[in-house]
Image: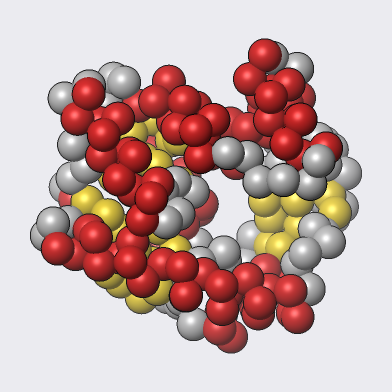
Length: 209
């Protein structure tokens, strides 16, 4: 089973990706996590990524495609954070065709503005390992410290209501073609991402099992 989890920042796709990967024994492919890990390890790929970051540029689609291809060759995965636009979706289709793999479901977690702002404005992140927490819904066991590695927790600079709203509006504008792309293929599964994470998981489980 190969799944794509898609939604605005704060829609809960990262949380669902973790739950689904554990319950169905799937490889979780989080583009953001992979890029951060490569930079931290100072690998050849990480050095390329760091070069873009130091210039304040987005990592190129070509480089991202190479990263994705290296992780999807065997199948049995959940993609979280890719594709983000129609161009990337077409690139992914080419990569998967090359390896005789296909996407089974494109799961779109649809979250409204208020939910996204509420979730992201209370999100805190571990400085060391990048693990995410939520002050209200998923707080750490010890205030200020990561459950996984003991690292310090902090709020991202872009997790302010004003910036979150702009990101949400950009997402809606850029995602329309991507959603239509998978809908025409009969692979789109849309559900309410505003709901509780356990309720969302149960609905996804009924669709993909």
